[in-house]
Length: 293
Image 1 (tube, rainbow, N blue to C red):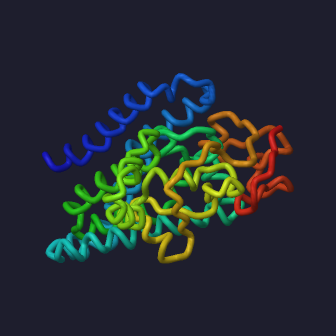
Image 2 (cartoon, rainbow, N blue to C red; image 1 turned 90 degrees about the horizontal axis):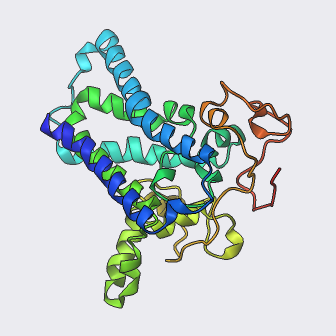
């Protein structure tokens, strides 16, 4: 029980601390975040850990106990190293490909779109995705299966570590600047920025356009591990931060359309969220174009 409580409290406490630090820095007192943005961020922040993820885990355990009871805790005695590797591959690497697919497939992009239309960074950006984006995410389902197979104890430590890295990668505190400031830390910085996601590499992913020489909107997809980008050829490391963020299709949509698409759809025929397939579907993989209706 203590491990379960700590597993939940660590990312929650970090989110609060980073949010306070960002507020003290003036981030949330600018006018870039609308009431609609706040609603998207707060609902996303609540639904993933309280509804989507628990729902998937409960359903998976129920299916396992009903149809495959002989496999419950089947790998509980597997060495911790192999269990960690299982989560890194079946959760984190599959999330890399899920994320990458959402920047290639125009329908998938509609579910990932809320994560990119905001024009500034910060920890509240972390979970901005349509609910269906997470509900269908293979990594969450595969993690649930691994837990059913007996790897739940390792997951209690794996998850808060992963969430810590992801939250820090979105945070305006930009903790990695310290590594770039001192020359003697450069070798350490070289290893870290190729291993895990950092503000510099992930901010580049959120940058508005690659024309600035820093942003990499269609790359740097890694969540916990950035090494997937290095391995699969989508990495860009500049140790700099974009000055403009967002997505080139900036059409404003109500929070319920962005989070609950395709259950709720835009009433605007010209919107990409008007239907699953429209004549106005925008390809996020192409370069920036100023489109704002």
